[in-house]
Amino acid sequence: MTTRLVEVQTPLGPAHAHVSRPPRACGTVVLTHGASGRLGGAELVAVRDGLVERGWAVAFVQQAWGVAGRRMPPRPVPQDEAWLPVVQTLRSGRARLPGPLVLSGKSNGARVACRTAADLEADAVLCLSFPLHPPGRPEVSRADELRLPLAAGIPLHVVQGERDPFGTPGEVRAELDDPAYVTAVRGEHTIRATGPLVAAALAFLEQVA
Image 1 (cartoon, rainbow, N blue to C red):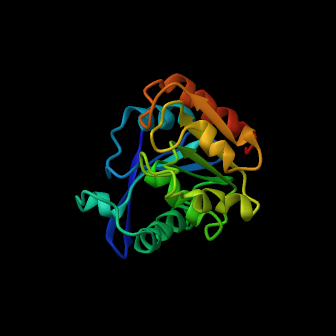
Image 2: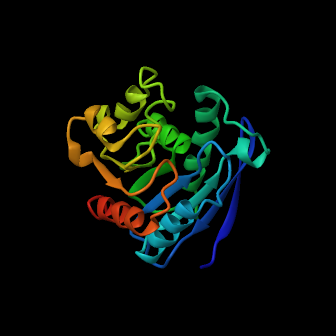
Image 3: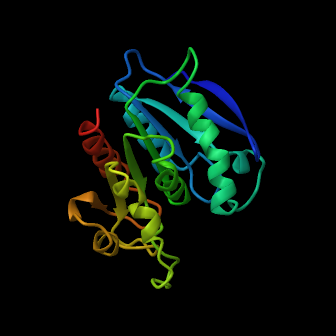
């Protein structure tokens, strides 16, 4: 797989987008990491590789705070302000990536995707391990963030580990209008069963392309 590095200046410093674009790509998935700030997780690499193999262009993005080596993400407003120019750059200019545009991320990255989908005019949002609440604290809910794409008329799908302490598939389904918006797979917040994870992502994207 050949990739090119696109460096984008943001209010938090440079972000890095590692772009894999197969010939005649059927659309673009902008995929980002969780609160670790790193791209090396096996589940993220598996999703990227599986999507490229099926003809999707994938921009694998290390956000600016991750490039800077920060151990924790910033608050939502500055994080989103640094995310927007990354996607806007990838979708503009002579080398712009094709639509439809799908925003995707793991955990914290899924939150960013949900919050910014309307502003970026995304065609769909794919959440991997959405952190519905902190472990053991279901009263601290992020359901309002999760529902933002749907409120804007943007298709949403969540792939969630059956034993995820940040919210089980049942808990996530309870916050959405249709249980079909959630696919349960074996695993916890880190989904090590990458085959079912990739299959669920591809099944959703087939409805988008």
